[in-house]
Amino acid sequence: MGSRARRLIPALGLSVALVAGCSAGGGTERSPGDPVTRADANALAGLLHRNFTRGGADFVATAPYGDDVVLTLTGEVDFRHETGRAVAVTTFGDGRADDTRTLFFTHEELWVGETPGLTDALAAAGAPGATYLHRPLTAGDEGTTPPLVDVLLEVLLNLSSRTADDPRSFVDAGYTWEGQRSIDSRLTSLFGLADGRTVAVAATDDLLTQFVTPLAGGKIEATVTLSDHGTRSLPSPAPEETAEADQHQEIAAAFGV
Image 1 (cartoon, rainbow, N blue to C red):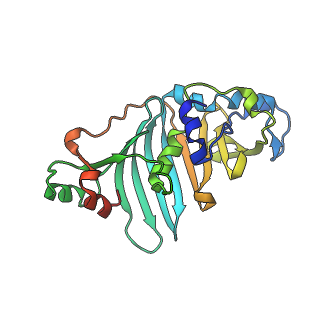
Image 2: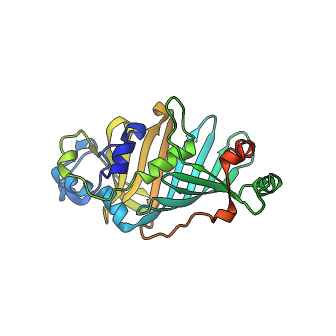
Image 3: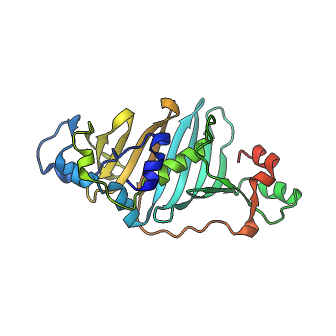
């Protein structure tokens, strides 16, 4: 993996286990639970690098938490420049209305906006024209828990590497082939990783289709689904549209930023 992936391994539990390829079996009959083969290793070693070389993708990231609460991010990511945008929707099982907002992000920064009442609140606080609050994207300081949206974005941005891995890293590592399934009408091969993680890879082109990982000690299961891989250009909001969250802490707290 690239340096970013290695840096995030301790926090997110990701490893060089992200696997690819599904045609690598060469026609040999396989059963769920079989170990990955050397041919698999050759294919899976370039999985994250293929995301980088393709440029970006559409994505849907979901994380159920609490009592029937689900956070869903739907958007686009530019893996080459580690930027993206998404609509974040939190749905509640108790009948409350959905919470919807727009996000722009880089590997270090987050902009949150287009949520009802935010623009008026910022204007009243001396920031007319601002529609987004800006703050650092954080993995959390020592002893604190990062916001779930930040963790989901870190997981997403970690699914890319500037270089391919050494196939030898995947041999005899305990990863397993778990069969095939259709995801959004795309045939994929599934692989089991360590600690309950799974990855689904498109059978036709060895592109990463879905990654599932436990978070928060297994209390939350995050799922990231990628599609339509290709080049993206995703500029962040202009300065005149932006107010700093640390300068408007009460508003940021009130709007969950």
